[in-house]
Length: 196
Image (cartoon, rainbow, N blue to C red; front, side, top):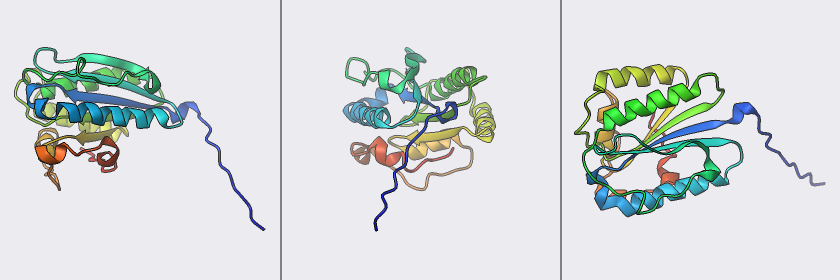
């Protein structure tokens, strides 16, 4: 006798995930522009196909527009894919300022909400233009959020540089140069959650 067991997924308010996605649009990202667009869109399609409630805040940054919001806590199914018109690398890289602003934005939104918070940063890590945030203050803010259950994921080329900017003592176990960055997939890389 064969028994087929089926399971169902019930969505409750506690199942809500909020992804705050910070996308480096600085000039140094130009060599991998098409890969960034394709990779983000692949990640977006995967999230849109998953059951449950996922909201996304998508922000891109450079020194000309240090905090440009493309989607603000939108249902992930309503987030538009990236294209060359919306993602055009240029200018400098205020990475620390952009991440600090994203965390402040996400914290304001999180007040009074029961959501799992995930912060994803895609960058080559070449910080060169921040004026407001210092590394130590950012480390302290990230540590406090991690203690509250927030998850942090770093993706991108020259990953070891990004990690050194965001964590005072951790060296990346593996490195990804520009050539391997052309082959990255959000779906694959996201399996290795580098908890900053």
